[in-house]
Image (cartoon, rainbow, N blue to C red):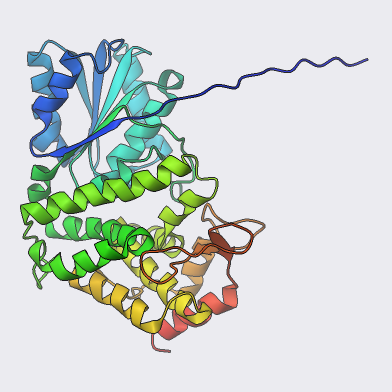
Length: 380
């Protein structure tokens, strides 16, 4: 005769945290630690990449040590291609070799690849240690450093392996945006435009009217302080309002994948020649044009999306070196695929997302219809 015992583990978890937006926030980070933000932490591991290391990683390391904290710096080669299980394992081995344990904190300093990888490491090391995100790029400020989604890429798919692990605090350093290459800054604007497309038509109009105050018609950053501050704050608000309602992406949070079904596939198939935001920009165009076919938005609204992306210096066409077949095949590795069918999330006009009859925000699309659109986009 079998016996059973029910394990009851119901609990209420408060994963709330603060996001601080400003310039040169190292002093604020140090003050937070001195005032007991992480009272049970005795060692700090700064995780950064090879580009950010001399600019922000080493200066923070020196400041932490001068302030009496025990800290070390761990760096990996910059770029999305380093965001792998192998890199994570190397970092874990380095932490273990320096006697890091469950009383440590991970400080992720950098852009989206750094916060994704370091957040995943923090979520699994010691079965979970606290993480602070110090975002130095617009992309990280707009998306990767907020919301608790972490992960790595594999040859098969991007971001399919990871955990939800909320940071204890996020610092968004607007001064760091001045150190970004123009192409990296433009890449970050794609996630900002995505947020406007999915949640805030007023913000979309603001970007249409003010894009020239942060980037020139030749694609060079201008970075008007007021516009940058408004963008950073609005990005955080929009993402927070979604994550608050659906922390673990059971339904609503899927809308943050707007443009990512095709975008992530493009990024991977390009061998990461396309930056994340560049790929997402093309993905936004694909969903908008497909949305017009399905009646979810007008051709004029889709044209506005394409026009804003173009003004931001972002690509809106599929590169010639990527075939439609290769792009289609890679879309089948998207996290939203169910029962072997590709699913998209769609704008409902501008500033809203389409919710379907079953309550879901994603819907299956027919491969033939997507392939037909891809042919049309190439002018075939």
